[in-house]
Length: 73
Image (tube, rainbow, N blue to C red; front, side, top):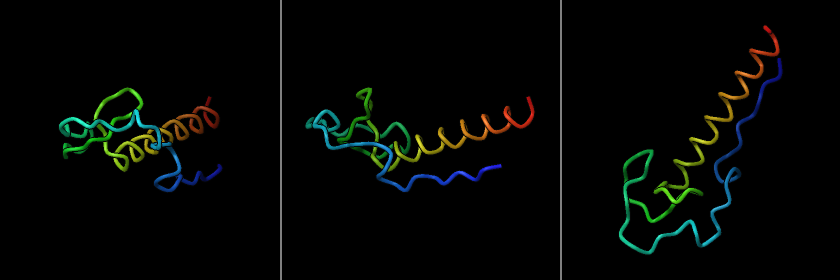
C-alpha cells in the first residue's frame, strides 16, 4: 500500500483572485465560525486555513476509500 503525503497548508488552493475577498462585513467561517472576509470558490465564508484543511481531509478520505476498494474489491 502506498502512503500518501498530505499537501502542506497553502499548496492546495489559490486565494490570489479578488473573488475570494469580500469587502463587506466579515461573516462566520463555515468551518470554525470565526469572522472572515475570505470566501471560498462558491462564495461561502471560509478562512483559508480552514478551507485547505477541509480539502486535504476530503482528499485523504477519498484516497483511503480508493485504496480500500482497490485492495478489497
